[in-house]
Picture (cartoon, rainbow, N blue to C red):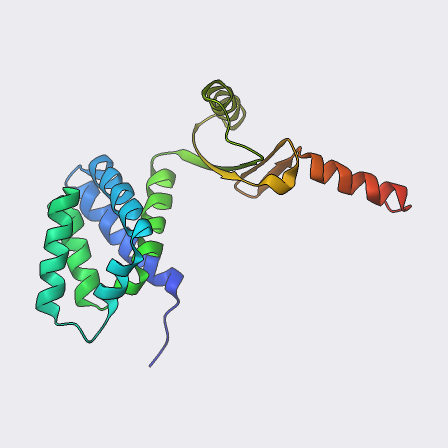
Length: 184
């Protein structure tokens, strides 16, 4: 039997969910639900482990899935996709599927995904200014994912697509060290 990569599995299910949501003109609604579901699953990984465990009866898993869907107020499209994931015994890949759906939503909506590393959390004013600068530079809306990295000492590292802008104190010190050693 041919082994399928987890990335291909995630893309297949995410695409199916996107198409179902688009067909019902509910892509924005399903996107919001996926974000809620992803947050809940990230906080409690026991749920995914339970749902992926082949020893638990399918009827119990379906009841748990229905209860979770009711609690998170998930639509029929999202619940149907989760049902299919459960039926096909792919619940262990739920987080990558949800992540891939988010990436797919951004691509199809013309939103650039940007990752920003900083020493500390940016203030609301700094965040607003950075987003405005990125949207102007990229000529499209952006979704910024922040990560706190104290080892940067100061400054920002910004990644979007295959490009990276590194204006951190740590990278400047590294470049200076290379120059002092007689490197490039």
